[in-house]
Image 1 (cartoon, rainbow, N blue to C red):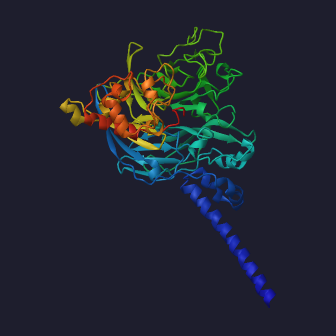
Image 2: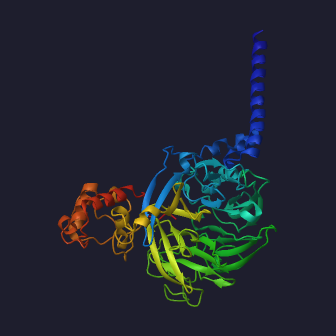
Image 3: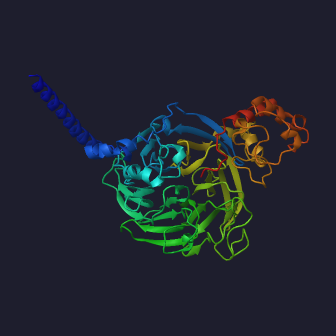
Length: 556
């Protein structure tokens, strides 16, 4: 009788397990079909994949802030006072920070995070929600399963910023006339154990933003090793019709010189046929890491790209153009004064297509747009976002040349930017914030600048000499990054003996003393006395204390 009861218990236990697997299968299939929140959740589609992926998925621990950031602040520019309203996605959902992109679609801002999860921000309800589409076909589950063998050792949580260069989604674009969404992303090739840049499109219901079909792959690049997403490019540009443009980086492959080889996809800007899978043509070549791509109202295709040390560029894409990398660059090696080329002296382009503008030192350019319907004082100008410099750059063009570039300090790493129908400029930052930038009409009507941090930290004040990010030998002032986390006079800048002799770390009180009278604080300091009021000094110190923490500004 005892044996009989044991066997019955075993049968019940087995039945419960089987029932669990059946329910898992059904729930997974329904979830995957109707929700598709993340590719990492597709393991519930079958019991077998659940068992295989269980260990791998433990690596994906997504950050979730839950602090409810929703603030408003001011920024200043030469011609306009600005107000910035902030919303953070990671307060509402656990997401992979760093990288990702945005696109405006009617009254929604579409978002793809670094690992390919899709969301939207409703401009009418001011709320985030998952996009109801199937998971992006990036083969993330297969990558997680093979990841330890690819790395040779166990790696850190893929969703953490420590793994930011390993696997990415690069861009999202709304194809308004086709009611489709296009996404550029890393796709894992399990056969080769490598990644490829893929572009897939999916039809959507524009009223609900639910999927009206499945993903369709339209482009796939040559394979490259995981860990080089930092140099992947991946930006798209669209102006209607059946053609989509895509910028591709060289993934640090300089030997052979793939960006100059038209037989590869690396270091190119290509035009993809949306109606014919695998049909594309090369527009131009010779790129290192193109991070920005947009069409102007006149139809020009404009790009930004990150060079090596120095050499970030803004240029116009023309059919057959060659921007020269790696044969030539405006920049140099990070630890030398030259570049490995016999074509031209360092910093010269030797007959290759020249950019419209270059930044020295580098600012780590990201996206570029042409400003429209924002304000007559800015409309028609170009706006470039930056990562290392944590700023926007407004460029005035005239007759095919750049008249000037104005730096507008934001204080966060800006990965992408777009504009809504009413002209509001939307920024996407590496800490998953949407920043909505508009004109402060009340302050503009008063025609009076606000005193304080905005006036001081922007171009006419601190950033006239200082910067955020790594200090270069030619910089006129030291970095302001991590100011309160490091000892006084501790970075690579050649400080005065008086400042080097000061002990301890910067505090708010010490910085206030220094700004009040630099030469009295440190004998021989080259910092002039600006005559700031106590209120201005307090505002400057508070603004610097709130500036984002970076590891030297090296992240791309």
